[in-house]
Amino acid sequence: MDKITRSVLRSPADVRGFADFDGPLYYAPTGFIDHADDPNTLPLAGSRRGFSALEIIRRRDGGGAESMILPLLALEGWVQNSGRVDEINNVLDRLMTKRADFAGLDMASCHVMGIVNVTPDSFSDGGDYNTTEQAIARGRELAALGASILDVGGESTRPGADEVTEAEEIERVVPVIRALADYGHVVSIDTRHANVMEAAIEAGATIINDVTGLEGDDRSLEVAARLGAPVMLMHMQGEPGTMQADPQYDCAALDVYDYLLDRIESCERAGIARDKICIDPGIGFGKTLSHNLELLSRLALFHGLGCPILLGTSRKSFIGKIDPKAEPKQRLGGSIASAVNGWRHGAQMIRVHDVQETVQAISVASSTALV
Ligand code: 7PJ
Image (cartoon, rainbow, N blue to C red):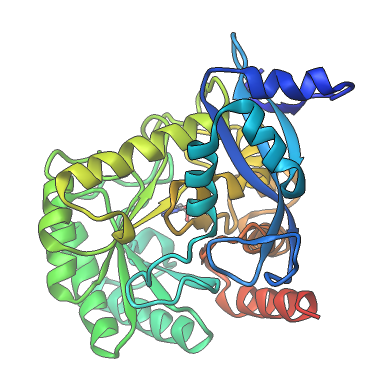
């Protein structure tokens, strides 16, 4: 069992069981209400969304975890019994505080990041020049459709993808980044390689997006710190080629949380301030369907890390596991449903292929929510 299960509370003693527990507890905001000014809610990361309860989670010996939902109105008494006054105050502070602007973007709202692949295998035909031109045109189109960030990548992390040298990766992404940055767009570089990070930032990218959480290259931490660019740290278990073979967790959501906390602390030690870090649970990277669903349903847990959250679910295979008929390009419905769920959990950035549809879905969801 690697999941969180809700405890059935039958008596005050069951509630006290959580209060008396002396191991680590995790706190996921829940019970979302769309008015931050509702008197029974606290604002989620300084946004218009409020949370009205905390899911209090503890690991179980032998794997998995159990949880109890505590309405904020009942928190005061519980805190006194648990002796965790400072801990809860710190957690609430991190959950409520508005995040600093990230790469100049206001983190009180939800931004769409458009995917710009510069991997020739993604295009059906054309040589390098063609690919560069197509990627620039695609980036400009996605920005016009409402993407706040353009995520440029030159190496596919799909299992079985062609190997690319760093020199090739640089050759692919630099002209695209330079053109898109010159047009004034906010550009992130999706890479695991420090040399590519340096070349991309020099060409005008302002964000480093690394699926290895700056662990994939010995120089990445130091290079990212020296460049001073905001970073996106994603969780991945294993290596792209083999990560889906047999992923294992004690408890997927809590293990990913601990990993990201550890990476944030490593970044801070290397000189990257917490307000320049965004975190991403890495949907589909070394995770079964059940792990992915656990992360998506507990996404708000990650606000406890005090950083903006980025979510990438677009066209991913977990959607194909729920709807086996759907090829990647037929996964728009699932991509949008999971993006809106991410928005509902207060994710500040959503990484997608289908920018226009996702921007529309989030606009409609937020305008019908804030009645
Ligand atoms: C992600 C990514 C993601 C972040 C890719 C794909 C695979 N970077 N790069 N998060 N996915 N931060 O788009 O299917 O989920 S490449």
